[in-house]
Length: 144
Image 1 (spheres, rainbow, N blue to C red):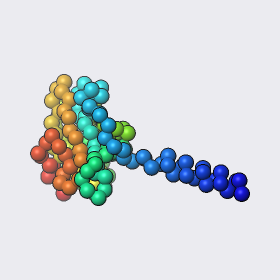
Image 2: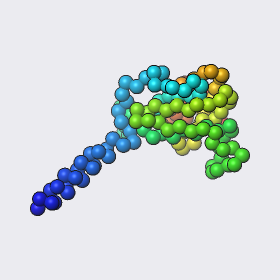
Image 3: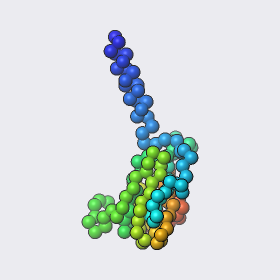
Image 4: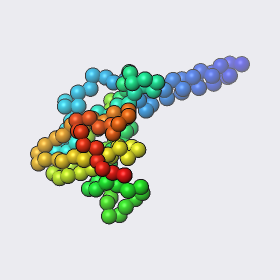
């Protein structure tokens, strides 16, 4: 009988430990204070709690890919991923890039066009709600 209750406790602890994986409430994260790159893109990735738009959670593990042109449906050797980044547990991400024009895509191929200027960091936040998802830019990329 004692083994069964210890096993139950173990599964309960494992279940509780796994709950926060994927998203967690937004903390007082100031991306402008966390950024360490000298040139490129940085920002916060967020997603809603599920039923409605609030509260908003940090999106841990959101993946961002940078291309020279709009990506197609699969791997294209003529348009490879130039750089990529993944958000940390607080939703913060950063991607170092050379100056130039790029297409940045989040998961589900939500893309936006950006220009990285020499010696400049551009903040580009992403929210996974409706629309193209990118704040700080009104330019969704014309990707299919």
